[in-house]
Image (cartoon, rainbow, N blue to C red; front, top):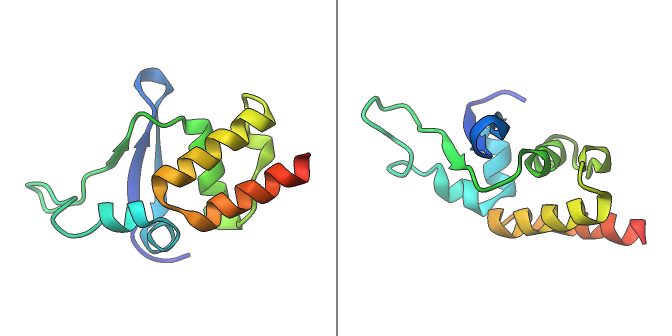
Length: 114
């Protein structure tokens, strides 16, 4: 995938991770990112976009979202806290990101597990 990437900081302290995702891809999937990357919201003094700070989110759960962005599958193997809890947290992340297609796929994964 070609194009501009955006920097997203997830987690706090030593547990934080930085992700670089393709802007077009993530903005198409998430209304949150579409709004957060609008001109004027992200520009700082240098004219470069600031990283998007999602320090209250869990890197392991965000990895599930990123994997889904690029592969359109829910990577259950990335869920470290147990599949049921991890899927529930992924669904809540999708709600915060306003990513309905992601939430739909998380629900499908939940149903498949039961």
